[in-house]
Length: 219
Image: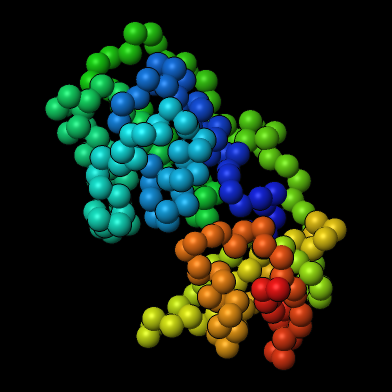
């Protein structure tokens, strides 16, 4: 996870969707299904595929509402896409991913046969994705000092209260660090969960905690 150049996009996702759009007659899809295990995934997919913006990102209902029976959501999504194509849809594109946005697949379905034969070459886009991927920043484990938020999350206990936060941040020299936000640091946790603004890009500081792990606090 820490060896990624950034956390707001995926070169492999972009290449898979671009190739799928070519198969879909140059991107003329009217139905979409973007796998939605986490909200960031369909958001990233919509950034990578602007022609899908303004259209519903799911035909099955999304994991939030449909669920994931036996971890088999995309098969149900394919069935939902077929039903949609039989009742007025023209071309549908399904995108599924696995891991931590590390495995990517796309499927194009239509209510009519293609006008030309599909190419028979390898459909893998690994080489193209590798060519687009920048070098990751170095990761340091014992840094103390100013650090700017690159990404973050919060883990909650069973009672609904924050257990701790995790911040991935950059040092002034561009190195990457991972630090905790203890539950006792309520001010920093409140800052991270403030819906009025995104904390990404905000300045803070890292220090070594009593347990030897790095801790980050808002400054």
